Amino acid sequence: MIHPAFSAALRHPALVGRHLLNYAALARVEVAEAGRSVVVRLIGAVVALLGAIFALGWGGVAVMLGVLHGRFEWVLLIVPAVGVLVAVIGAVLAMRPPQLPLFSGLKAQAAEDLELVQALSESSHADR
Image (cartoon, rainbow, N blue to C red; front, side, top):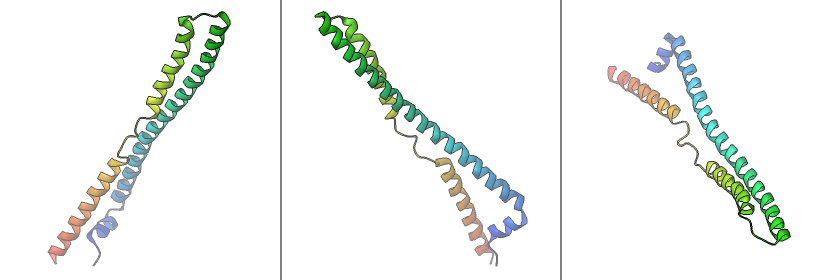
């Protein structure tokens, strides 16, 4: 005896093909969402790195100018502080947790399909 799911697949191959295409489309959407999360984190890391380099560079210039002129100017503190602020914003973006759970829609759809196959199997065993 052929399992009811296989007999249905043999009778309606177009439906099976369309179902598989829908699985592929759902997987594509979920991979794109996961990719967006990774890209945002990567951009955050690059911004943090550039902000830290900016803060270190202008911080060194501020120290040299302060020593050269022998007095403290607030602008010498504000300019490197902008770099620190940019680095902190980038670090916050980079340290965001990824969107979890990954592939939840695909897992839910597969679970629904498995339940349907089990229900078909149970109904075929009850018919005997």
